[in-house]
Image (cartoon, rainbow, N blue to C red; front, side, top):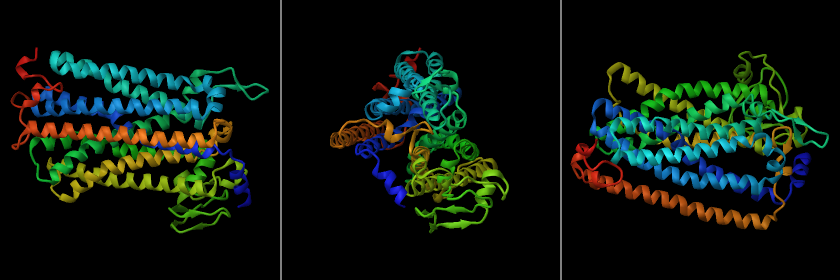
Length: 476
């Protein structure tokens, strides 16, 4: 207990506001990331379906989703840019020493953003001016541009978790940088695919959830059924894949970052036949209160055998591991993420079994209530995943090479708190503007649809808006 308090007392005063600001902006930005990464693919699938089937309802949905995609991307660029500046402003120690090693990832992300912006602009323009096939083919690179941005940021983050690709001179500065090894670290593959599939799952459930609410309110027209079915099917297909990838990355953490794994599972001392705790609280003396204890399960999950040895937190000094409070936070967020994933898997299996058996959507209102909640639950799971990744690495900002306290800015804590307050005000305005814009778009679309439900694009007033052609007949 005294050791933990001494570690906290040695932390610079500016560390708390810097970490709080970074946590807030990251948590806010990540709400937008799933749609930014995966909505282009969902929209393109709907667009392709509409062209293949000559389905005006599908084309109408694709056009509307492309408008949402553009608005969301614009807001995401703002929040993502703030995060990029914060790396330099709040953590100059890390960027000054290690920027030449892992900074290429941020450069790749910037190029991905730029390319995606150009492609989105072409895609929106194409609804009104390009031949249908040309328009669709020009949009094909859009999902790959979105994945390129994710590639860059995940390369940087995986390097922070398992730093590679450099040597150290006598002063501790990196030399002999190998960019390829710095990008493709041992954690990059598991972390990247786990993240990307999580984005597909989350965006699919979020998009489908909007139409699930409409279906619950009695709007059983083709517009709502198609708007629900395609994104939900994509999410349902990827959900079991994500479950497998989640298990894989947890096993990689067990091998590559054993102390983080110990925090995730609140394992105090190295041992075999280690029990699994569902929730519970770790105390500074190593005792655990609350939660559900399942004997030997942690060892079985880690190595498929009850005699698997699991590294405990006490294998490293107190200053080199998460505190008891941090470990408890990591453990809870990990358990919440796994719990939500398990519920989503059951929902996906319900949907899949009925579709394979009867080729129709479930009729139960409880299914659509679950589907309506799945989008929010998926976002919560993504937030929990990032908390697990970042808090579980503490006190290291570069694992086993630089502590967070060494990287933080020397700016006075008072100035940082003021800056944090300004960021909160700006973000409230930005997200309020996003909700207002989406609300106005929805109202316009409902007005265009009239009281009888959505009509083919050539029959609606919406054909005079920038989001679609003036008429199907005007398409070259």
